[in-house]
Length: 155
Image (tube, rainbow, N blue to C red; front, side):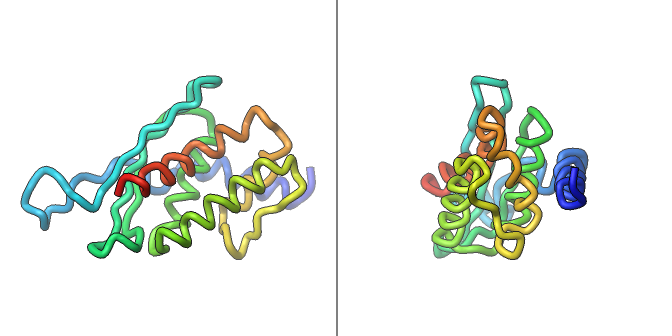
């Protein structure tokens, strides 16, 4: 294994063991009610392996910027690490920027290794580039990203 592959594997394991954004956010206390019109949730499941993710995204009052992302779930280290990396990456981005990130991530993971994720754009999530060579693992890595995509459609 090359030094870069070792580093990527270490990043995936670190995010899996110490996930960012894990623990579902509740309603915004400033609304004074049990609901929050700016929070949307999506539950996604990979029926092949049983990985599950429930993701909540909060958007700004104008509905354009992602202000918070949280998730909970169970599954393999790839699905858990990917959700962790995603939450770290998209907070502060607009919906359009998040959609571009999701599309680029999907394209790279479906490329079977032909497209590498740019670390300057994807941060730690670039470590998931190698997953694209393992077709059975692509859905694991995509689970959180699909949940975010769905949640943003609902927000």
